[in-house]
Length: 100
Image (tube, rainbow, N blue to C red; front, side, top):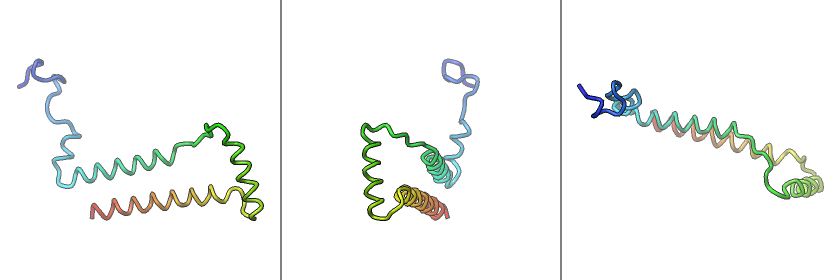
């Protein structure tokens, strides 16, 4: 029995479902792991538009240098994407190990 003066969310007073997850042993760790994975999915979905002044000229010079070295222009971006995926996989494995 709470009144509207005692509860801001009257008549829905009491613990929320989110609060109950913290009462379960290990619940906070599971919620933290879920948040980390959701954040990784968000980061992976972000497009990186070129908004830096002079970036086009820089990329042209970089591609010219890579061509002189015999490296395809797409190779550094591909390697960076692979490194990001490997890092995310390592983070997920670390989360799984922390919950075991």
